[in-house]
Image (cartoon, rainbow, N blue to C red; front, side, top):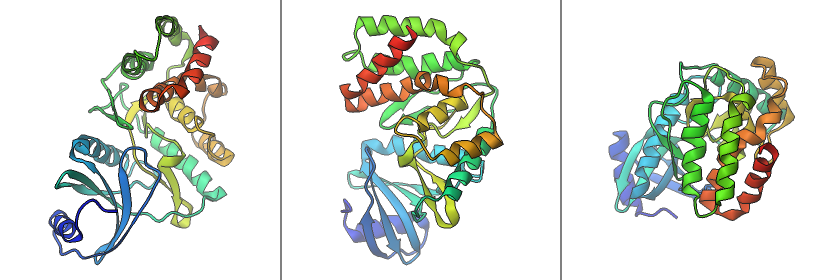
Length: 289
């Protein structure tokens, strides 16, 4: 259910879009862990509307900037943001709507090619112009000359510090030993523009087997980290990885480093959802320390 009256929402949308708006229908879309969302049909077209309490507005602002950074940088479709507004106790983000279609082999092929094209966008350092969020947690993007320094100081350490009540002194010593090894374990590559939170819930097929990506946590990082993230919850179709590799080949042993990169999203999930993610973190630490 929408959290505000229809007439209030129509007035707010009219002000945002500078045109008269009549809301014809709305239906919720599930799957989000942080925000609420739904499809709204109006006299001016169909949109996707996200909302949360007003303290979530900084997350919407970061999401909007991330979407803007990704648009037009590959053949992947990225929703246009029409803007953010507040109404009563809620903040809203209005986005372009893409219909969902079943994923086909052609979708996975186009998705792999589009992600490879996105990753060819580079920078002279690792990081991003602004901080943003991973889920509901702050994500620091200060610039670093090497990916190892960025990974330690902007990804792992902030999550380790946030998880102090769940990580023991022994865990911390294991992380310290791992940090000393990372320069020898992670290869250096030019920074690549990453979606940053690429799992199956943040991508889908639309008309003509095109791929849509949503809910980014963008930064310039190591593209192996992005591919590792796609494998965390079961992985994508083989066609996706084959087409990616054919357009932007990865090092032949990249899959041996998947666990290292996925320490970051596992720590994020530990902080967001609790101790069920700790055994995987401990398994990886034992492997390397």
